[in-house]
Length: 628
Image (cartoon, rainbow, N blue to C red; front, side):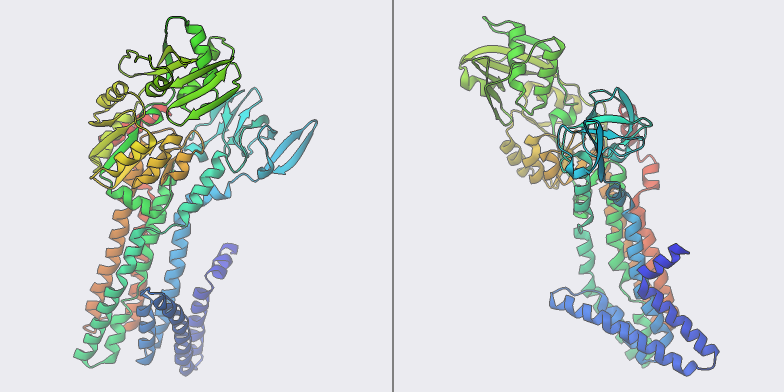
């Protein structure tokens, strides 16, 4: 009962219209039927006037909408004495808006779930006391208590011995994840059955869950080009409907025929279909671990012709392991790794983490630098132990040590070059594993119409060519700087272009591409901020899933629009011959509205995701399931 009352208050105009209808029935049964015509007609004209005010405002802003049909239909039915039909048209108009709102709320359920679960509070441990604070008051380094089944308020490191975390709202992974001391725990994760202590490593604003919420908010507020395209049908549809109604009146000589046609020309299918479909598509994407920043992104994904990939962290796992150290004369392996790891402490590159971990595994102490500078995408220069250490790409190191020479590397390997005090010190070789489902993802993209692929990377040509050959990518550009990537993407003829990347250096090209997709599972980065869509799980196959969702959403949106148009036009043509009375026509149009909404709601997914769309798609899903 409470739910019914809540809906009645939310959709008060529908409730009022139904109330007016019930009042008319009571009056007719009590012998006061003469008053019903005046009540129904007066109320219908009042609603028409209210709608007309908004319509005029839209026209003054240069936007010719479809409301003119509804207003004309109401006025026409009142003037010809079809006052019951007039009330039904009002019910259809107000009910259509209510159905649209309800459908939008249903479609946004997955997006709203993120917003409502946003962590609000934290338990900070201050000495022997536990202080309740808001999530935005937490500072980096604070020790927090997370109680059983509570949401982790900020990104943190587990201080307690072990626990399990439900990360399904972040990654889509339904199986709880085992965490041990020192492991990272993401904000938005749900703690298991034991209270644990964590150490905050980010503020609330910079934590994973809050960044996702910000992306969702941006996505939900957007409007797709196809929705605007639906608005463009307004003028021709209105002109056609009025012309058909006028022709029916002129040929028959009966003004009632004009009203009978117009009650079937009301605009709800066009107004509802596209918005519901696109919000449903964004909801479906969220359920599949992809936050899409707007319906327009789904439209671009549906038409994509080219997919461009970064290599490290995108097509590969992004965690290279040290495989060899090749020091020059006068240096040894331990010394070389030690100075490299010490300098790389000041770099944000994934290779830096690998070198630091390799040094720690060998028990090598890391020296604090007197100063350090990072040249984005090139390397790091640091003063370590009184010596100037340069670590990075070959060209960058050769600027400081002209005698530097390239190392021989095996397929799939990459080299990090080192100079110490202006002297070439040697190279360290690392290898990065190709993602197991990368090839299946590219095959699925080809099935979806994305026939052109390209790889852009800052790595050496030998490494890039080896990875590309394994995946069947024919267009490769190695040794790229961020500006080079932007230029290459801009020069691609087969558009729209999808660019997939994960690093800070990918941010410019992600912003420049028609659709930038960031692999954002490792935290909020500049890549996520500049991208059009963010993959929340460490799974490259979600790129193909995003394209599939885009294609399905646009197809369903256009199908729903044309379904509404075709059915409405068909009924109008029948009504032009006087076959459908105005009241019956108004009721039929309500059915058309409902059918249009149900058709658009198919974009939410459900059965689309339940079925295997192709063998290649199935293989992608199988690999995803086995690799987590």
